[in-house]
Length: 84
Image (tube, rainbow, N blue to C red; front, side, top):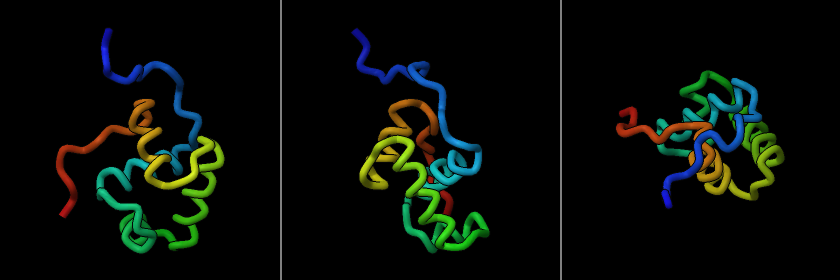
């Protein structure tokens, strides 16, 4: 039996903007509001509310749990290289 997550289990319920937030957090390897806001050219409040909305939709309680859930479901892919 495979130990790999089932990537076809569920389609991603997130809007493209929220999915982009998660993909950027994975790419930059951070959940820091300021870093993500600067990279995405949005306000820090937009980042905070985005993570709040994602957590509510996924029923997760932390950003780490949210990212792990998204990665395991195959909604975002882990990058091999971080942006420097």
